[in-house]
Image (cartoon, rainbow, N blue to C red; front, side, top):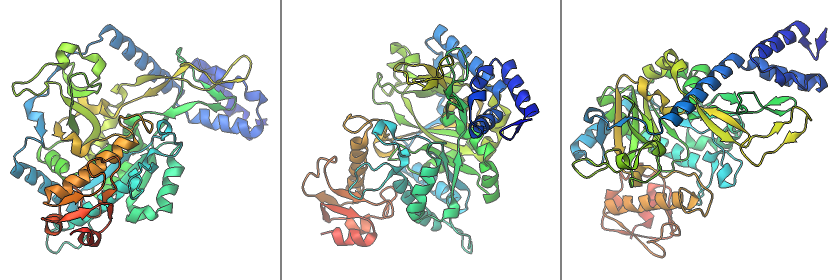
Length: 502
């Protein structure tokens, strides 16, 4: 006998497995479903490791209870041996890091892994966040800005190739999407001809998902024929690179190092040669960029020693006394703000499965649509009705063999897009302002000047310098020194820049 085309024995085996795991309720409406719906639900449940889901729930609950009992983590400052600052480093040392990074890129040893699974829901958009237009004069999306930085950096790195080396200088771009964003992300790249990159060097892969659970650990049905699921957090990147063939691809391409960052940082220096070179010089297997914490009370996580191991401690876990503590030079003792910007050796990414079972999962309470198991009606809750389970990208820090931290200037490298237009903080307007401010600084640092209407108000001024022209301010002095650029001006090529200078 079959129901749909599912053998009865296989269906009963799956039902028994879920019942033994205490999750048999997911079959509550199975007999009412149309054959196609039965197949969809069966396939979804068969693909779930229900025993692992229960284990993750148990571990997450235990972790949450432990956190309640110990509201303040035991924290210590980062040892000097693992911490350096681009801001304070000698210019010759910064140049050494940059040269080393560019040399590694030129050898084909460096890739980029982008965490781009989020939608722009809080921005009022259902599109992937990387597609968002922050109203730059050019109308470029976050994806386009980052693609153009890769293109420019490839050009720069070609100057560091050894004589006679005929290999092409390529930075492969691995883009991690989620179920809701995967197709839309790929379509966006295809419609825009991959922004000038070769299609074979832009690789898309999906992060995993986990079922949403009630507060009692029961799997939630979103509809009678579908389990409610959610992406497994940005820490899902580690399982995803294993399960989707990314590790194998990195090895086949000869990639030794990867720069990993979040799509919503409009100032991200993609494959930053300074960060790459710094990390390589330290023999780092897992590294992190941090920004200078703006004030003791800023609600950001900080990178430090947490309970004796490298990690990130949230603002709520540190006392006021600790948050205000300062070093001899006056800087905050716990001032290394986490900005989700990482360096990984391929060897480290390969090693993650050996300690994956020890990684934490965190509870995020959410309003989750669900079916009432008594009435069969879908409920759209107005208060938190269940939980999503997530792991974070920094959960691997305690397992690094050679950990290092590089402090950077947040004005130059960190401007996240988190909030709705008009909110005034980490929103489209501040992203636009911070990019244009940086572009003006690039011109001024090269000895030029930008003049005209609204030039002092970067939320309004019509000026933009494409990453095609300059990645981080390089290559401008010979054109702009001693000259002025009148706004409005959108500079897409060196020829545009020459024409704009007076």
